[in-house]
Amino acid sequence: MKKNRCCPVDPETKMIWKNDLQKDSDSLKNANINDIVSVLKIISNPSRLKMVILLSQRDYCVCEFVILLGEKQNLISYNLGILKKHQMVDSYYSSKDKYYKLNDNAMNIVRCIQQNLIMGH
Image (cartoon, rainbow, N blue to C red; front, side, top):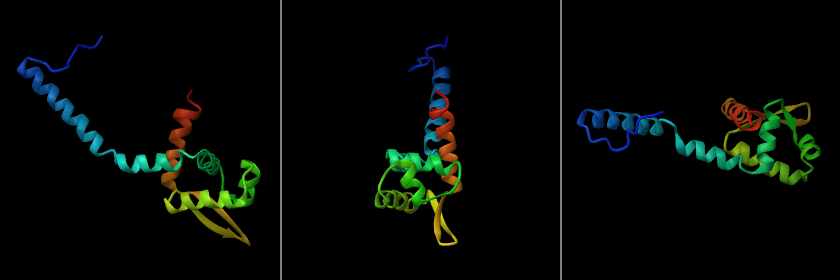
């Protein structure tokens, strides 16, 4: 059982308490909260979340997303455009087809989501 540390009266304990709170505050500053919030907003759309989860497994073209997600091509392209604008996906051509892949930063985020939220019930 943890000892109640809230607002200690003892000066020595209070100093330790304040130092611990400062460390907690510093960890929030180092967490790039605004960047994390921005990414979470982008993938809060169910279609975009499905896309990044699929892209964590392999590269896909738009026509494959149309079939997998059951959505119109223009909506798929729109959502891929948002992911690309926010630098979560990159695209490349193979023959005449354009493929999309997750970049490394997005891949790390998706793996974290998969491990902690989807598979880790």
